[in-house]
Each structure stands twice: as structure tokens, then as C-alpha cells.
Amino acid sequence: MEVVLILLFMMVIGAMIGGLTNSLAIKMLFRPYRTYYIGKWRVPFTPGLIPKRRGELAEQLGRMVVDHLLTPDSLKKKLTDKAFQKEIQRWLTSVAEQWIQSEKPIEDVFTRFGFTDSKRKLHLWLERWTDQKIIHFIETNGDRAIKEVLPKEWVAVLDQKVQSFTPFIIQKLTAFFESDKGKEKIQQMVDDFLKERGMLGNMLQMFLGNMSLVDKIQPEITKFFQNDGTKHLISELIESEWNRMKDKSINEWLASFDHQKIYSSVKEIVSSTVQIDRMLDKPVYSVLAPYEKTILDVTVPSVVAQGTSWLTAKIENIIQTLRLQEIVREQVESFSVERLEEMVLSISKKEFKMITYLGALLGGIIGLIQGLIVFFLT
Image 1 (cartoon, rainbow, N blue to C red):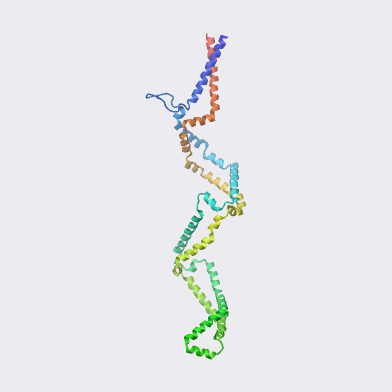
Image 2 (cartoon, rainbow, N blue to C red):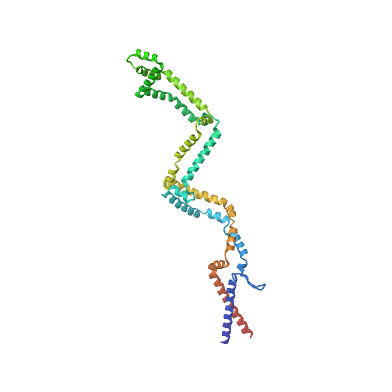
């Protein structure tokens, strides 16, 4: 009985020594957190292993992440994985559907992305853009004739329009002089003519008697405009003037007008065509809804395919640019020792306990063996 008690005692002592030793060794990984001194003599094993080697640990962790975890090959494999691409496509599809159904005005979208006061800024941008285009156009084409600047198709159309001016002008002149207003104009012109002629005018009026001179002149004016010679003369005058205008350069044209008024007119035309205010007040769905099927069936898959392909091709450059190794090292170095201990223990607390229990078990076994050796030797 005494032998059994001695063996049990030695097993308990061995187990306590093994368990406490392992527990102390685990704690010494982190503690003490700082170095202690007795005078100028540094206390051994201070600080703990991890606080002492934190810089090396951070460096090794950074290298491990780049060389073995987030490697270009592993990231490429993930990016080209069909399941991953489908997941990204589902996410982009849900985002696209939200935008397609959004009732927010387009201006709110600009504001959301940091583009505030979008209406005023877009108006200013459009005005500056128009100014630049006008100035560039004049600098480039100022010495060129109108017929050289305009597209040939436009010149051909304008030539046809000019040819149709003669019948139009004659029709309008004929209609005017046949009207009551035209008759009044003829009467005024006749009266002015007779007044300027003095006695000769009075004599002419006396010879005509009661017949109005206007009634005689009005039909003759109509006949004059309907005469082929008149039509041919007007047509030649119009074509001649048009040809002269076509041969003028842009600068010659601008010299005849107020530049600022021309610029303002062009800006107003551009502004009324673009209609920035109206465009920004539209809800998002009014712009995107007509293209819903194209966006969901074509654009989203294309964006995923092209995006993953681009990332796969550029992943090595991206990793180098991000400097992941330095990021990991800096993050680990910025952690306090307490936080490192908390992180490690939160992951490996169970395993550390098992190591302590294993030390106690081994200590107990060693104590038993020692007791048996002592027993047989004595």
C-alpha cells in the first residue's frame, strides 16, 4: 500500500510539473509584455518571445501572405472560377435592377457620387466646350470659303434651294401687289412721283381724267413679274449673289456681323438642343428602362467577363502596387501585444489547453516511471 501511495504521489507531482511547465511556456510566448531590468542587468526571458520578435513576426507574416496565401496564381484561379463569376454577375444584376427601377432624378445620382451643383457646372462646362469648339473651328477654317467648309451634300442641297427661290419670290411679290395693301403701296408711290414732278404731274393726272393711275399700273406690275425675262433676271441675280456668298471666307462673313451675337446664338442653339436641366430632372428609370434587357443580358455579363479578364492580366501589377507584404507587416507591428495575445488565444485557446493537459499527462507518466525505477532499485 505504501508503494502505491508513493507511485501516486510521484505521478501527481510529475503531472503538476508537466502541466505547469507547458502552461508557463505558453504564457511566456506573450509575457511579460516589456523588458524588466534590475539595475543595468536585464531580467532573462523579458520580454516574451512574441513581443521580442514582433518585427520579425510581422515581416514573416507579410512574406507568408504574399508568397503562400494571396499569390497571383491563387487570385487568378479565384477570378476565373465560374462559380465566383456567377456570384459577381448575380450581384451586379441586382445592383443594375435597382438602378433601372430607381425613381430618383439623374441629378441625385451625380450628387451621390460627389458631383454637387451639377446643373450649373454642366451649363458652364457646355458653354466652355462650345466656346472652344467655335474658336478651334474659326482658327482652323477662318480663311476657307464657305463652300469648302460645308459638306458637299449640304452645298448641293442649298444650290437646289436657291434655284427654287425665284418662283417663291415672284409668287410673294405678285400676291403682295395684287392685295389691297400692295395697291395702297402703289398709290403712295404714284402720289410721291406726281408730287415730285410738280406741274407735269398735275397735267398727267388731268389727261387721265377719272381713271386711277394705280388701276393701270397694278396689272402691269403683275405682268412684269410673270414675264419670263423677269424670272430669268431674278434667277440670275439670286444665283450670282449666292455664288458670291459661297466664295466668301469665314472671316469675311464674321467681319460683317457682331461676333458676340453669333457666339451667343450658337450657344443658345447648343443649349436648347442638349437641354441639361430637363435631362437631369428625368428619373433614372426613364433613361435606363428602355435598355433593361440589353443591360441585364449583355452589358452585365460583358462587364464581368471583361473585368475579370482585365484583373487576371493585371493582378501581379496590382499586388505589387498594393504592396500587400508591407501592409500586413505594418498592421501587425501596429497591434499591441495584448491584442496579438487576444487574437492568438481566440483562435488556439482550445489547442493550448490540450498542450497543457498533454504536459500534465506526460509529467504523470514520467513520475510513474521514476517511481517504478526507484522501487525496483531499492
